[in-house]
Length: 391
Image 1 (cartoon, helix red, strand yellow):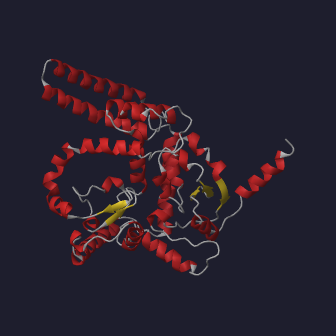
Image 2: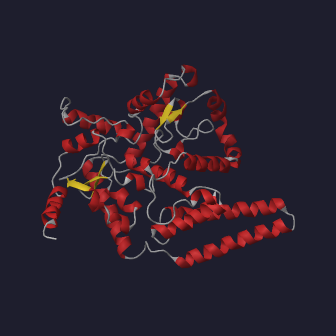
Image 3: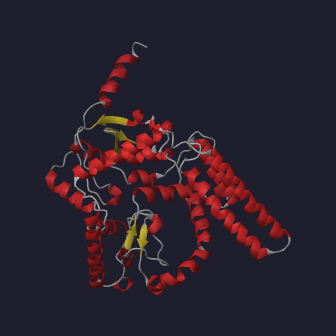
């Protein structure tokens, strides 16, 4: 006991050591996954193999202040675990780096060639959420992973420039209607949201209304029973309609369970979600978590958000009209001849495409399982191995 006390004191002093921005940059340059939570510097490499939300989610917050994301997406049990990953602290307001997965460039410890101010300017430009100044980053990612596509697979540069101009006008209109993006204003907004979160939590409004879920269970049971009745009497089309209605309603409960939003217990909600998703729906909840959590972290970013990436059938942003590299799928999303033939008619084909959308979900679920895209090591909750059985 007496021998362990100096070791504990040394650990505590190390965890409370102030790390400079330059020191943190060098750690990331060395391949470490460093995030900032509540002014604490966390090295989360040891947790990545266990992370239920997948690797990509963490990669998109490397070098960033992820306090709000970490707080909202994790239960109290997980939030209490961060001390074991703390390697230091920061002082003052943290200016986010552009994560490596998004094209951010980090200097190793022995490289002081570029001025700090120049790097900060570049990071702020590349981190633009409008996507207008991130083309350079996209190009860099593209070069690292693939060969350029023929020009016939792309719209012309003049067309892209025109669409960029149109988007800039929309951004200007948005900025004129909403608070500015300067640090002082944004800090005030963040503080207000955190205060609101604290008040909601203190008043117990995050606690689950189990009565509402009981009514939801009864309604879904009625839909399922009605489906079986029409199936029994041979009204197959009507039975299929009620089955689709049943599935669509169960999706909401699976969504809540996937976000650990029902009981707020990871094991129980995971079991609820997997029961709905796999045996009933034939889908992998693990795949959904991996995809959906990335969507929440980089919402609507064309090159990063998998919920936006539907080529060759749909293009929800004009940047898909060029060759865009997907950091989620780790491949080029080419605007090829098939896309050129289908995208102009996407408004008319949308509901027809949706008829086959469920089959794509089956494919994505099996790819997730067969390529072992989930956590490399299962958390000790007894849920490992049950996904593929249900599917």
